[in-house]
Amino acid sequence: MEVIHVSLIIISISLLASYCEGECESLRCGNYTLDYPFGRKNSGCGDPALQVECDFEEETPLLNVSGRQYYILEPENNFHMKSMEWYKNRTMKILAKRLLVDQCDLSESIYEQFLKSTQFHIADGYSNLTLGKACVLSNVSELYTMSCNGYRYYNFLSPDSSITCESVFQVPVMNQEIGLLETEPMDQILKGLEITWSARKYCEDCESGHTNCDNRKTQSFCYCRGISYSDKCGNGKSRIAVIL
Image (tube, rainbow, N blue to C red):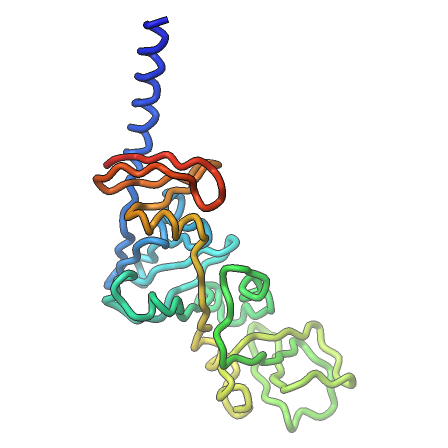
């Protein structure tokens, strides 16, 4: 029995050591440094909804949401997540990466996950810009049009039942921009979208104990920074403290 007991201890130590190997690190990208609750993509660190990676060519961090990528446009540079006022307000301005790759890749789906999310919300001061793709209409004098990849897009404040389009969709833009029909719609869209975000409760509990939150397993692990920390995670699951 004593041999078995020793073996179990060795196995336990081995398991804890494996978690120590995954110490959470800040993401440095150009002039940007992102810390908890943001985590490097596929590192297991940070909030699962706030996973980031670096676009080294653009030297700009990318936020990964539901399989889509978004540039973090603001704050512009030289920020540290824990020291800036905007971190307290939990706001950022983002832009869908696909719009920079192909500005004609317009559809309502570019930001739809933020409309359905419980952790992200579109900031106040935005309204929907209605765009129609490949429309059939007799009078376009009151509409602004633009052409992209052989398609013609129409910018109008509200869809008219007399207008038939291949697709009609809405994209959020700042209120002061939405009525400017003489302005290129894409110029408005490329200004990005300001969103607010929230961290999951168990990760906030984790951080309050001066730890890093790790979500690689079904349990939530806390990487302790030189202290012993053992408790229940906010989601009711057992917390395993890893002393670094």
